[in-house]
Image: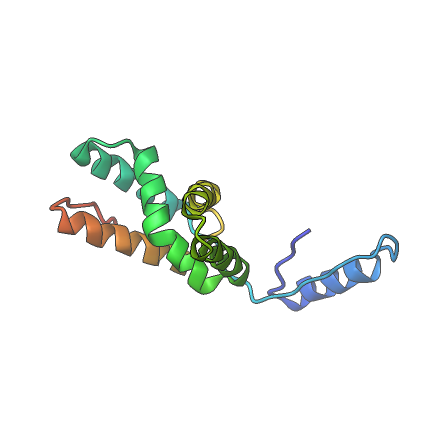
Length: 147
């Protein structure tokens, strides 16, 4: 269960919910600063951009989605998300131990499982700025609607 506490009323409800949790099985409650997920408008524009770039390069938007996640999103999540960073560090250890083919295969799987869905608005903005810069370097102009 997830609850965002932004008012006194929501805090009161959350405390009531926690008070009513059973003691068996043992429960875990985690709090953290709220970060708004990427917006639906960002997502729609992102896939529009992939379609435009794909048409220009002769690639599918699915292929570009995987390529850009690998090139840009992995780095953003590695910087910002401690659990993701641990996973990438484990992958680097596999590479350092000389298991390069295995590391490459694992990275492909990690990239395939990496999603833009949990990205914050700021992370998605940074990701899209990276894609926009790359497209511009290829001479591809992307639309920038007012948000």
